[in-house]
Image (cartoon, rainbow over all chains, first blue to last red):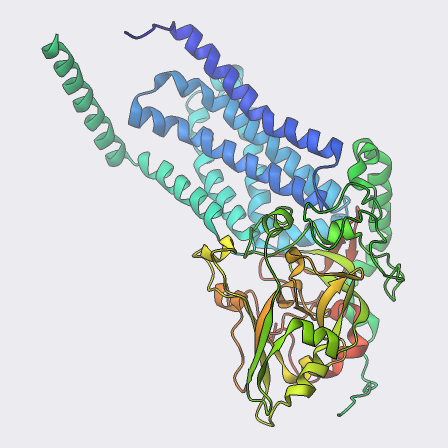
Amino acid sequence: MTIKIAPKTTRHILQWLTHVGSLLPLALLLWDFWVGQLGPNPIQALTIRTGDTAVTLLLLSLAVTPLNIIFGWKQILPLRKPLGLYAFLYVVVHFLIFTWLDYGLNLALIVDEVVNKRFALVGFTAFLLLIPLAATSTRWAMRKLGKNWKRLHQMVYFIGILAIIHYLWAVKTVTTKPFVFTIILVLLLVVRIKPVKQAIISLRRNWEKRAVRQASSTI
Amino acid sequence: MLIKTKTGLEIPSSEITPKYLYESRRQFIKGVATLAAGSVLAACSPQFGGAGAGEETAVSSDQTTTQSTNTAGKTTATADELGDPLNSYQDITNFNNYYEFTQDKQGVASAAADYKTTPWEVEISGLVNNPGVFGVEDLLSQFDQEERVYRLRCVEGWSMVIPWNGFPLRKLLELVEPTSDAQYVRFETVYDPDNMPGQKSPWFTWPYVEGLTVDEAMNDLTLMATGLYGEQLLPQNGAPIRLVVPWKYGFKNIKSIVKIELTDTQPTSLWMEAAPNEYGFYANVNPNVDHPRWSQATERRIGELSRRPTLMFNGYEEQVAYLYEGIDLKENF
């Protein structure tokens, strides 16, 4: 027998898990910073950890729709917004560490790095493109923008690609972790392609129907 | 042997530091000041105590040392020849690039703690008159151990000042006598995937290989290091014997060497194999030749908050510039 949980409770639990899970890396980072556990090169550690978390959260927010397509988990759809906003939070912190802590707000050096170095340029572009998305994440903006809201927010796919390229270009050479991140992004984008999406949905519906039939025949 | 003297063709410093760096120096200092003043968190955190703040207990390893201060072991030096202080023993032994164990720089010390480096032999072969297998103990007793305070500049953009102990590679080469055909020296790290889990990673061609020209190898700066801070090397630093070429990026300093071969063809290093357009054979520290994906104009000295300009040949221009006369350093990166 299964225990029935009210949809509202499920929604609340998921929301809380998202908040706690998204803020945990920041809390751990501040703790390590405070007690001096960031190691001999703390700025590099801060940069890498905020970058890692930002990419992870961005991928998670991009994973919501595909997970709904594949498994029919409608209840996770509202998590897209907080996951995206938390990703943006980490991007902002990452950017501040780069410009302020790392480069001491030295504009000449920062501009040189951003303009001449493709990995920084790509990361900076992704950051700039995220700003309008974060700014229009309110219900009010959604209503105001109407159809254009969706068009604007479809930019997140492009931002995801930029973020992964930024990651791939920032590491000394590609190894397992950046490779896995890339594969995940590719899979998440492939699931959204219309024929793929429709095929998955009809497969799932068939499977669900069969499951229901089997369940009723065994009774 | 031939002692090469300085050629008088020194490159003026105006050429080695990018112009914008000079121009922006004031801004740089101002930025740092703002940073120091504004960064309340940083000021409070023990993390930013500077190079001398190594008061936590040292490495979990049970061998060699339990010293935990900056002045571990027998070293009298406190700074390099430019006046910059040594990095702490704690930092040098807990922030390592050693992919054979792990790619996490702070995880190498514990991952490598149990690695056995005795007994150890180095095989020298190839274009030499006296090839042979040398026990590290024999090398240690045969050659005087010198202390050399060198800057180490990682290709990733950070640097340290390290008091190494060791002997010039030149002395070892004079012993085995390279033939006149020998042009390159090829080094190989031990291949031991059972005890070096990183060597199971399919992303690299193991074992680690590095190389030098014979002229580079004969330069007096080129060191076979066996210790640091007067203590025997710990596994995470490449025990029991490693190369230190201070004017080149850190990855040239191959660790835990078991083979040295004199050849007439340019060795292909592990990093050249992994990304030939990004990591070259020479890999000289050069603020004017960027990595294809990031700038090499500045670096962060471990223990410092702000970046500092990277020096041509890591500040060893006087000693090594003659090696590259007439060579295009952009082409031969």
